[in-house]
Image (cartoon, rainbow, N blue to C red):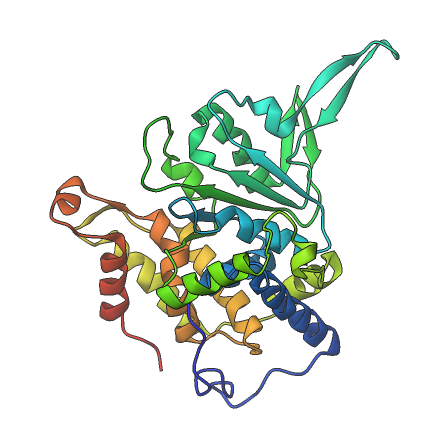
Length: 339
């Protein structure tokens, strides 16, 4: 995900700019300030920060992948500190049970009755740390929460708060004692973002901050303050739903999805749900750029983060060194871009 050039963010393709809305502008400015607040604690990782804001607007969930020490957990904690919402953190371990996430029904001896005690999933922003370290049964306990925004415990369904965002982290290089997420659960994540090791200049800046006394456990001390809340998130999400998409751009999204399904390197291409996800993230990105319409460049910008984790390579393609990113790039080059 990269910022578009000024000419890409210019006039409407049909010559009609989006009408100014004071509430929309206030919500957009608040969410842009969220990115600035997170930057007070996290050096670089602008792509991941943008992805988290897009997910908040598109009402989706994010999977962050990176080696230990690239600030995955700090990034989410900084986002939580910049938002005036409730947050919870769950450290996923091999002995974590589904009830530890969703909550459970317990007997209250004082009232001689059973009562439901909510789990950490009853929050606005849930950090699921090292989600691939817990067994599939506990991973699956998040499926209903992520897809339906509710949990069912002891036969009773209970709605989750709004907004509700799951940000999960996983380590891509350590496989001992881990349980890889199945395709069905990966598909529930709107975006998957890889956090790279920062370049030398940014790593020097990280060390400089620590040398100056930065404490990652004290985000208020680093100056991170809440700058947006549920009202701004709801206003922004409502505006995103009003972003226009031309028939040509809709066809472009569908053609990209269909191109992955016919790729000889893939055994699993993008499903219609994946195409819908790309449409949602593209609309959110367009609105963040101050436009009321989606361009093909918006689709290209979000394609890898939205579609990459929904693709499955054939074993022979993996042996040949083919990557998902290369397949997506080939699809982007082969599908004609609408004018």
